[in-house]
Image (cartoon, rainbow, N blue to C red; front, side, top):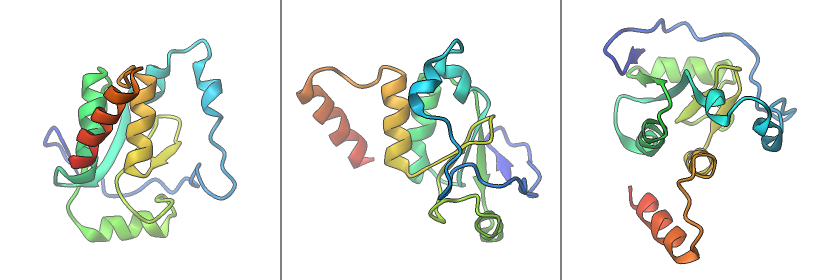
Length: 140
């Protein structure tokens, strides 16, 4: 896998059991507001997607805008996706996937986008402005 900074990350995928599955182990979102800031949950996360803009680009853009340091893992070989699927790292067998430092894995583009947007103040209070923002996001 090629990281966004041009360096190469080992293609050996961590064999740790997935943390989001039928027996979800991820802690409830409301517990994420504890003594640590929410941003610290995302600091150092990894965004896995193909070596293209596509569905992960809005995730990358929002993390950057929020000042979150992340590893942009660009997958160029489908055998890497197969390996991730075989190890049940992709809950629905699809990319993009965001892996937090804790090992928790977030999937489904819109859900990830909404999660980041709400937690980092990117969602306007006005219904109309929120609609407009979602309209723009859907067009990307």
